[in-house]
Length: 361
Image 1 (cartoon, rainbow, N blue to C red):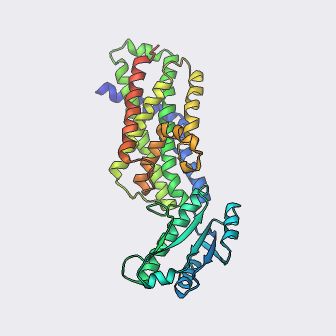
Image 2: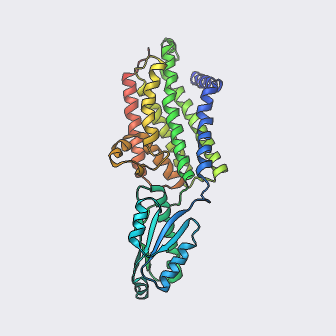
Image 3: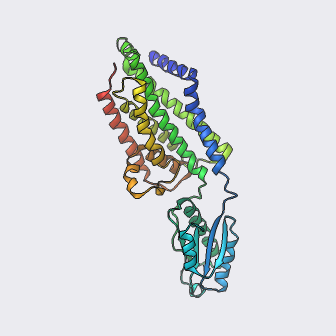
């Protein structure tokens, strides 16, 4: 145990002395979050052009129209032609069209439900989610004002978003997932460097052994992951008011599982690399598609349908989804048990393959 602790302390000291590693491990994710956060965290100036078509023209529809026009994020323009508004929607001039159908007041008077139709462009995933979520909240308020009886007004199409997420709320779990990706993949370069310099060969001839050396490296990376996650969450909370809604225990459990999974992936992808220069392109080849296809910066629904199998195959997709579900209760891509199972499968498979094919010399 004493030998293991000395190896672990040696790794930590070596990391501390490497200013480049310190920057990319701790400062880079924080700077990344600051840049994107300052650009997208302020929702006060955000507004969406909405077309309103009142086909009922009744006191009830006028009340609904008045409430819609009072919403700060909506610039509502009431028009008569639905077809014209749909053309404008398709061309991107507006973000949604709300239609109050004829007979709405008559249905309300008879206690029947009446649906407000919302037309939106699904390719505008972020704005559509915000618009539909806001409209649902407005309709709920109108229902409470009209009657205490069963719901009389409902939105025909609505988002399944459980919370109104700002972009920074979506971004922070993504940055945390990105930091886990970098820490796991690029951490394997240390082992390649030691292999290249014959350090592993020398350790193999000592009582310390290679197993303790690997164990110290893994624990060292886990410690860095916890510190890194703590710094990101604290900064997000203090600067951007992002709060962790879910369980802290589950959050750090996913962080540890994700880090272990990517450590194992990192060791596997460099299993045959003889030099750091040879390992770097392999790591970048693995890293590049995950950065842009796993949904850490933008919702995966923005991607073409034919890309979904690739998205579903990337382990970072499941890390980001799990972190987002726990931290901000974002709309889940997968059940939590599936995220854990997939990450566990990546961990077991890559560890098995790395042990089977890893070259010590």
